[in-house]
Length: 244
Image (cartoon, rainbow, N blue to C red; front, side):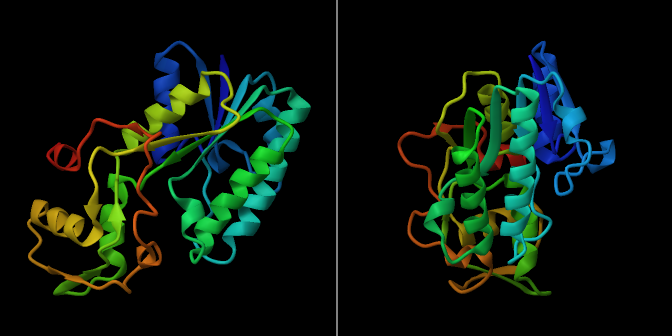
C-alpha cells in the first residue's frame, strides 16, 4: 500500500514511516520540511496522488484558543484533497478521554478534529492514545522551580511513543474502522507519583508537591484519562522505558 504520512518527520510520524516501510509498504513522510503546508493546502494534492491511505499526525503549534482553528482548517483541507485523490482511508491520532476534559481548549480541539473526520467524505479510523512517556519531562517543567515540582494527583496511564506508532501503523494498513481504537500503557499512576518516579530515575533531588490546581492536567478529574475496557494495552512499562 502507498501511505502518505502527514507529520511524518515528527516523534510519532517518523516511527510510523519506519514501521510501515519495514513491513513492505510504501510510506512517504510529508511535513513543512518536504513542502507540505496543511493550513494553506500547498503540496497536498501532490502528497496524496496515488495514496491508498493518508495518516494525519500533525499537531497544533499551540495548546491555546488557536488550536480549534488549526484543526478545522487542516482537516478541511486534508479531507478535500483526499476525496479528490480517491484516497480510501484517513487516519488520525487523538487522545484517550479527550471528550471527558471540556475545560481544556486543546482537548476540545482534538474532539473537533475527530468530529470533522467522522462527518467527512473519506472512510476513517481514529486512534486514541494516552499520554506519552516522552512528554513527562515537559510536564515536570511546566510547574517547577529550583526546589520543587508541583503536580496534581490526576490519574494517567501513559505509554511509549514507539507503542503509539505501532498502533497507528497497524490501524493504517487495516480496513477503515469507521470508529475509534483506544490504546494505553499497562499501568495507571497518579501524576504526582509518576513525577517522583521520574525525578528519582534522573537523580533529580527536587521534591514533588501534590497540588491539584497545578498544570494542564489539573483539569482532568477521576478516571477521565484512563482507558476503558475496550483498549489495546501496550507492553512497555514506564520503569522499563526509563531504564533503556
